[in-house]
Length: 250
Image (tube, rainbow, N blue to C red; front, side, top):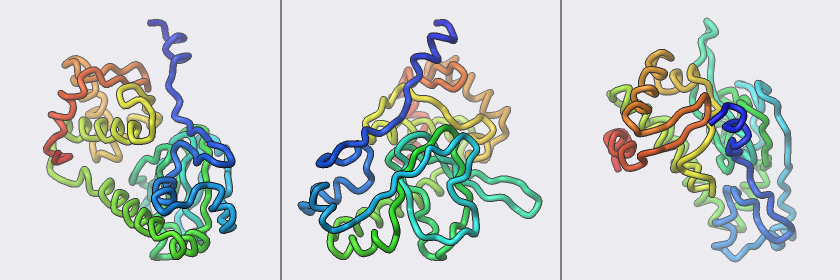
């Protein structure tokens, strides 16, 4: 397949924005609202405001470490990377956030953002005023439960790759997790774009960039995946999950 054809067929992870009655297809809170009998029209009556922001261009920051916290944001389109830097300017990647996932949850306790968030491609967000979200949680108990769930998932992502695992296991777990996250939001679980660089992937997985490139080639040669630049296809989902089983514990 030619490079031009491959690029034109690139799957783009973009949410369906819904309408006056339907929630956005990747809304992080729609299930909690609907389970409690609140459809989108009833939420309007509660004066809960959601601000659509963006697009943020590649390399543009959504927020920076130390800035005052006032809102959490759900990714509507694109991918966001969070990271911190030490006194010597060395970067540590904390995570990557896809459409339907929330950024800013780790700022709740300190009232300041403890990390930086940057767009890896063109990014659009739904910005939720946290005081308003807290008020809504008192009216819709499911919202509070959903927030706790999302906080738990955020902590789980951070600790996912902290064990003593091989490079193959770490990379396989990362790919399987991405696949599951895309699938949960209605996107293809077997074909998606790796919007993060190999260097960012390596940093997140605590591996050397050349190790990531080498392991990706091995996974491709073994028939687990097919990689064309940043386009990624899972060709053997069961095999990849088997390789990742010790990291994911499922």
